[in-house]
Amino acid sequence: QSALTQPRSVSGSPGQSVTISCTGTSSDVGGYNYVSWYQQHPGKAPKLMIYDVSKRPSGVPDRFSGSKSGNTASLTISGLQAEDEADYYCCSYAGSYIVVFGGGTKLTVL
Amino acid sequence: QVQLVQSGAEVKKPGASVKVSCKASGYTFTSYGISWVRQAPGQGLEWMGWISAYNGNTNYAQKLQGRVTMTTDTSTSTAYMELRSLRSDDTAVYYCARGTAMADFDLWGRGTLVTVSS
Image 1 (spheres, rainbow over the protein chains, first blue to last red):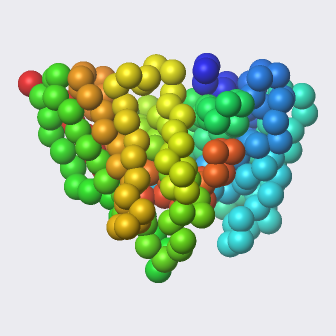
Image 2 (image 1 turned 45 degrees about the horizontal axis):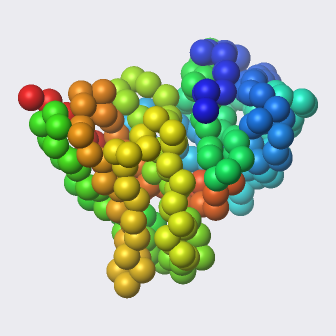
């Protein structure tokens, strides 16, 4: 049950696009289409942004999109806005009702 | 209002136990599971385990096996997480989150800070 691998930080200017990667193994990310992404602002609870690799819950802007290729999932945020600055965590089902999170990525909007 | 309301902050000594509650409202409690996720100060999210509110089935993270117990009380729509033999590195904010067992946590509590200190 090793944590998924995410870059520690990414940055972008307002209006630009950024992509955050999340690398696992064939036992988690690569083995199931159950990858989710969470946004967390300082001192707040995480918020679900993407589930089942690419589905958006109602209320989440379509600027947020998810994808997966092999053992790596990605979250892309287009049209960056100041309020997107936060920590982002990926999460994957790993079989046998076990779940694993990534280490988190700090997004800075320049 | 659909929400999860957690119990208040706790301070415990090493070796003690803590039990955190998570009361659900605004939805059918038994239609979902509850996962517990913790976050040590300045660190990332760590999945602790999951319980089905429908039948009480549980799955725990391997590193916590033997120290953690998750339960539910369907009469009050409340989930509980008990962690025993507390150590200083158990100091964290503990969150409950609604979801299936498939990593889709769509509703979160505000978190409960548990501090373990002598």
